[in-house]
Length: 142
Image (cartoon, rainbow, N blue to C red; front, side, top):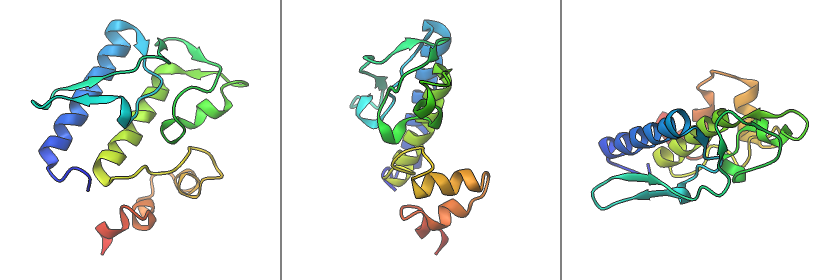
């Protein structure tokens, strides 16, 4: 596990979730590139989001590919023909970020069906078998 201190992991994720919630609901923006590299943590453990270069209004429909591949929601890949909700793509990226913080690696390289781990998750929604086979989580089952 990347962060061995579970209370620290929880604190970081709660702060991130609150920051994104405030960004969406109070400021009215979606970040569109939530990733490990865009998170700052002070010596006191305070978390800040940075790099708002792709940000857009939270209510916007996204019709172009934005973000970093391993964090992007699957609907981003089809956004040119089928626009997607900006806020929901941030929520997906938060999930990917949480997986990375907990297990030290992304759950997949891209949220597309040609990625074996993403395809496994899509073909078996709700199944915990994904964790039995992913190289960074399968040790949990030994």
